[in-house]
Image (cartoon, rainbow, N blue to C red; front, top):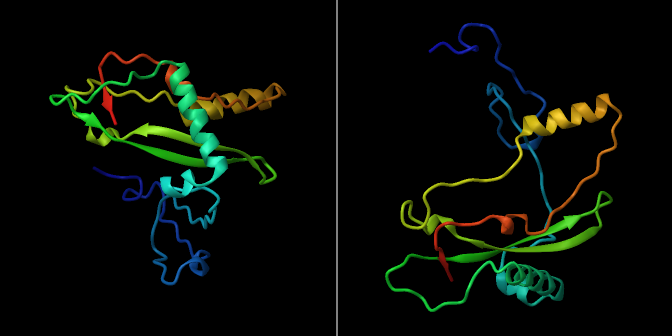
Length: 169
């Protein structure tokens, strides 16, 4: 297979201006590169820490309430002949454009890596938008001078129906 780099259609890119970010840099690498320094420590990844803070307690309560209202699950005793999927809390701080805290978001997620295909699920589907679609909408909005607004749908994933029975602890 002949790549565009090998046949000369594109040339290797040299990034000499990134040396101040790292101790040792190979200046001959090519491709898309992103060097970022992210120091957002406002969130947490530990349940014990989050459970001791009132704003995270409220976020977890909102999540449990939403799951209960939607009838997402039924509390049942564990079945010995079924795979029981683990769960964990994911915490994220949503911020306003000025950097102030908009809200604390807690999500209870299933640890799907313990599921077995054919037993716990048959297919996977993730309803996410493609980058090309977002760019197309932005291009239309720009060309037509449309006003854009952002919408955050709480618990959007709860509106889908599962055909399989999944047991989660």
